[in-house]
Picture (cartoon, one colour):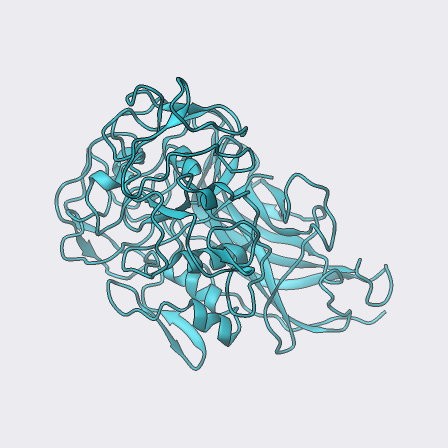
Length: 507
């Protein structure tokens, strides 16, 4: 049998920050390919090899008490043959190893979860790696291995291959009942008909009737709150089932890494080309870079976020999942923010160590109220902040001052708008939660069935999407968890306070 010749590609270390207590730093290193298996025969689709790497991040956790969850890394592989285009590696559902170090569990994320694995029609697009037992502190494993079925990708046994390994910090949101709406005064908030002060409880993934019969889900009319129609179909992801959510909004370095694996035509379509409001992604000689790698990536359109999700094997979040990710399973607090209270910091921040790995709040960090970036606290900063910035402050005393959600997800209120699939129009309600397959169209668009904005097989519009959670440029009221002021507005442009984060159903 021929041996494969491997040209190792040293992947960029993806540096992301924050967590429930202090700054995180996720890192992938020492990437190599080993253990080629060609016993199935020359250039057989069953042939595989192992992609080996080290993985670490700071302030990891797992707890079996409330909120009964953990953080994780979504790890996936891209490859190219010779000088060809970068492709998504199809992984096996078994045969992976977490190496040595922190005791870890690896769960494969199939293209179509809940159906049988198949090497070519339903491969694993990545894996979730997380603590096997309760604990907190640094997570570090050495010599982790993922089984890549390169033959199923159509790669020959003797091909010269470059490999990149990507890791995105995620947070596990367990299955369970939860409420939408807080009983407060938010615009167009959900409630259980007929009393607007009664939040509506979601108790399963079955269809939800929307209407004016007692016990129905409903919401007041507003300009952009939605059509007050339904039902919300059974296939629409409601947040009851377990899912993973990105711990942070997409950072500028993550978006740069995405652009640098696309063809020149695809990257040109997806490049925001903005130079204001702390957006610092530039291109030279076809290579993208940023001087603000740790800052949340603004100027992202719905189509940009959908493309990133598709490329990473993730999918857009729904607005019901947004409320679950913020509030968890606890009883709502009227007019609450993502950190579970109705109080928020009220003085303009100043920054220290601007654009650095340790960018922080130099002054006016609140030691009692929730910290968030919005029109009052933004002051003269004029743009989004480093992801997870509040949790890393020395004065942080827990979830509230860190601005963290019930599950430890960061900046769901403020910083950049969260783009979510709306239940406020028929196009949004038609979303079935299909995951991205790791590949974009030739033009650089997401191309998954029933994703909002899909036209002629490509996501080139935004109908069916909306906005939740507010931004550094919005008022405090709009940051509230249940505010639906623009939950069903269609906007295709790139703007200074538009960001994105993706989710994936738990295996």
